[in-house]
Image (cartoon, rainbow, N blue to C red; front, side):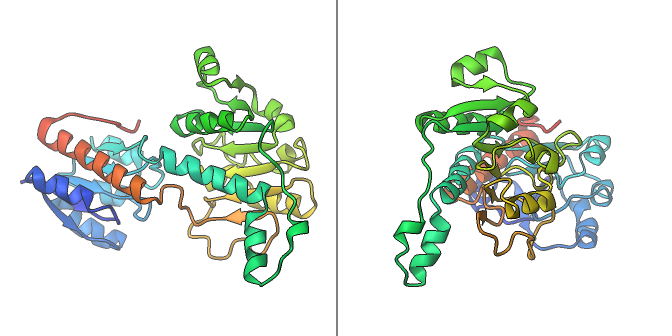
Length: 312
């Protein structure tokens, strides 16, 4: 009998889909690696979010496991090489978080450009500091989007609606994409001089590690802001902190960190830094959407041998 293990917090929408298709499932959250190793031989499918790391040891002990499902995009927490060696399919839901992440990206941009966080704190301190909160408009600003997948494309559409000039850094962008989305492809080096805003929506790799560092920052406008809703390791946090302190760059809006959970951020208490605790996908709509999508994909694979959104 095929059975599914839900090992992370996932919307109950998934449970209903499994019940409708008469698939057995267990919900066991907060398990250690050893605890997962001990029970994983019972399960044909495993569902996790970012709170569970699926290690080689877990996978090597998963004698009947056929599929690992990730409601969301990132699969950094799954040993893909081990899964491949054991003929285990890894699936994600690349479209489920697009709107939520794009909206958070612009929330961070607005917070920096209009000093919303500082103004809010001032009001809660019973002050009326209207004259010190002079911000900037987005209209006619240059936004650089690094990575032009589903989220990058959504960011470009919102940016165009604001009247911004959109530049894209991506190896995969086509001439057709440039025309369709009204954007211009540039190299990363070219983008640094252009950017009023540079926002990251790419994967973390050896090539993208520390794209933002003291050298790249030195080529940017001192009025520019960096937004990171992708992966923490894209930004060298120490270099960026020093640049903000020395007014070599204006600010940083961040949802992801090199080490998570980041309970002692080096940016704590800094002006012109707006931080959120990796909540890019944390909307009710997005969580229900990705749970529904991954549950349907798991059902299709276990019952009909149909593969959707396999991670390569």
